[in-house]
Length: 254
Image (tube, rainbow, N blue to C red; front, side, top):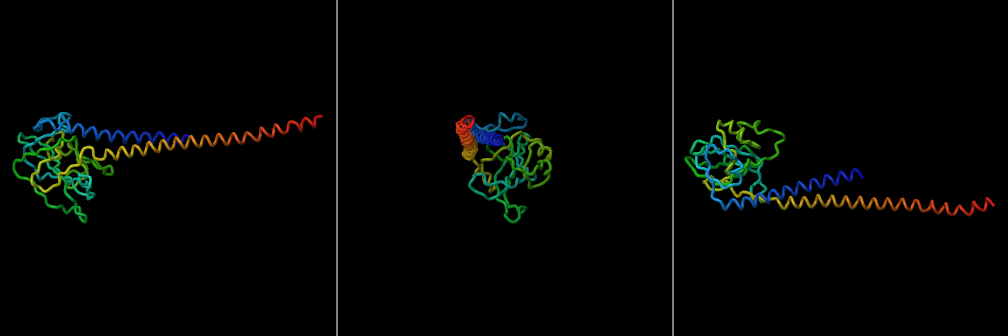
């Protein structure tokens, strides 16, 4: 019984977690749809309030610092239909007023035989205007407990932290990442995954967990009913034997 209660509690908790993840994605998609109707916000140095920028359409004007470009490994194509592994390409943009913001420029396929053999891609020279969506952080992947700071100085990395990377390049970054939408002729893929991609999958997983919890409840009920029936059957013969023994004993006593 205790084991069954544990299974029910765990599966319900996992189902609720999957529901929350699904609702988070659908809520963010609705938020993006609402913010899309607003005029884009121009980025400038000194904007420290990430809450006022996240998920907003933004425009940044400045110059890419190509020497500080990093590639985040093991990233699938953003549209959710391409299973090939690749890189997310990030380059800091030095704003016209002297500030810096990290730009998630696009996706680059990875060489299947040699991950260090990077396909060529262009980085625009001179001042450019980059439009896109402000993200709270760069999407992360599991990296076996390795902190982003441990990868400092590498061209190819697993994850990146804004504050740590700003210290690494000697230029504090704005607290958001620009997910680039405009085409700057660099040949990178920018068909980003929609915000609600995978929400249906989370709801499906939730249904499976809740279904398992319900099945456990049914099994406990059925096993309990069978145990009660078995105990009743064991009690019936004993009662019968006691009744049958009564007349015989009385005859002996006579």
